[in-house]
Image (cartoon, rainbow, N blue to C red; front, side, top):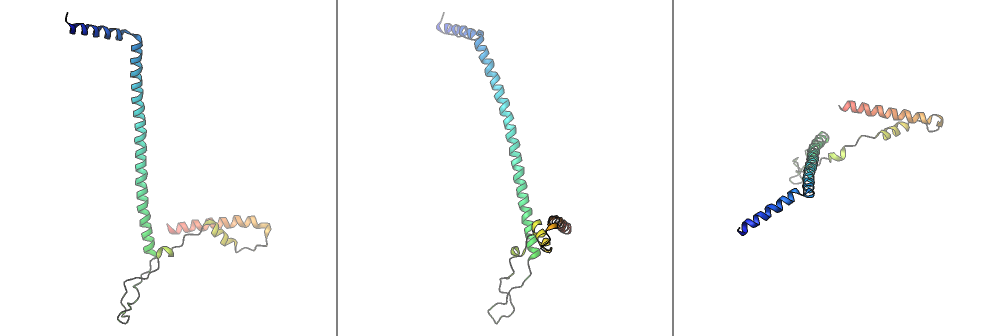
Amino acid sequence: MDIQNVINALQDYHQGMVESDPTVQELRAEVERLKEELSSSTNHYNGIINDLVKLRDEALAERDLLKTELEQVKRKSVNAVTVSFPGMPSSGGGGGGRACGNDHAPDAGKMVRPEPSRLEIAAMLLSGFAASDTSVIHNKYNFVLTEADALIAAAKEVTK
């Protein structure tokens, strides 16, 4: 018998012993089970990650859309408030009525006053009552807050 045949025979014998060993079979089964579990967990977490990435992308797109809309609203507000002003006459040439290139219009952003809050409106309404009548002060507060809410609702209806 040649040496290669002996080596092959020993390898086959060893493989047969390994294959028949129950501990080796249990270990192989456990390894396969762990591989499947890891694969399913990985797929599960990849799905969650993909969902989170999709939500993030949607939120970023919505944020960009809102920024664009806000800029449009700001431009419309500034355009609505900006006063058309041709500028001051130039100082050269005897003030011949030409614009100097600077429109001297007030900053429209500073001209826009925010709406008063509910409490500011209530305070303005409450200032019209006599402070000496303390027996009905609670009713006054309820009244002015109700009136403030009504004024705010009416203002919203007008701006629609």
